[in-house]
Image (tube, rainbow, N blue to C red; front, side, top):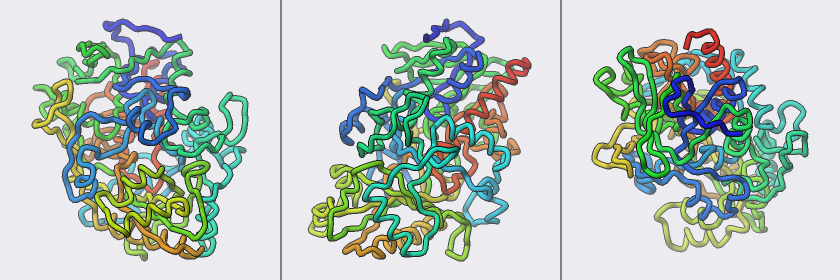
Length: 524
């Protein structure tokens, strides 16, 4: 049963955001007997509410509050008000994701050491490593029911995968499979239904087979009686006392009324845009540049992964939309091999978009015979997505745009991003290899497509050993304020080649354990 907490109860942990990080931290703390108030800007959507239609689902779940963009990335031109494709709902972007759940490789925790100096990149080693994260990854994989971990079988391959696999093997790739997915691959004891292969799997899973913080973690946390989730609660600022410790959170409730919840500890998990925005909007005379920003690193080092897509057209139908969307991966290129002309690596993952989204993202703004003829062959298409490690740059950052205000009169985030030369070299290599995969199995036409608004948004409050280099320490506790934590992808020091959700969840489990232990010891 949901526990209602008083606004003046200063013993609670306030968690801002309920996605892969915030949702897990809130639920894990509640299971440990900690009183938690979770504030979520969006509403609540359960499996029965989801719409198996991409356009309608986008309107139902997407974060559409105003944002602005700048930089040389094509997204700033094509989708200037939509720098990222994230969700405004209980569960955050775990309500709209494909399910790919991959561990970082050992070398990716130490990118600065491994890659050496990269001109223009602000590389830094994480203050944690693969060995330290191993048990937390194992817990996260069990929580998410990740396929091909433990004794859980992999998902079956659809036609899109079979084309992908055949082409990969023809090129000599060895590490190809239906991947590690947070999608239940068998009927088991936790009451999650086995995947029904319905397709169009980015949006919320109507079967509840794909893990989500919204309909798995949050209800389990609420069942303890220690968690209250307040949906449609938009946080405006975090408050602090004269000693510099946070004391509470101001937020606008569902009626637009400004409320204030007192807090013992605050965990910020609003994603890589809203988290730094909130810290900066919480500026005071004591913290004139925003909370936890003595280093000047809040908002900096924004990463979105090096992305792009490749499609192949064949002489027979593929019907790529049938079955699980992203259950297919080639990992051979995820290695670090600078002989290819770049540092770090990338994954190739199966992808399909519905026809309306395909028309929007294939080549935004394009028209004419070449464009329409591609869409005419939609039934015969196979598709893949590229995801690789992009370089952190201080100049890629989130700032406050004081000229544009949201519905509450708060400055909106401006997202600035320029591709690093390493990103461009990696993308061009990936385009070539992706096209070769399809050409190896008889594609009549292949075409790369530009990056579109990503759900992988990282950095902006990065983890660092030294306070001068970042925003949070190895527990994602801010260097400046001991009872203020960051619990989302904004804590990432570097992005690695892997989809980030599993790592966010593993870090959240680890952080909740640390917070509960420190609270018990009266250190927090």
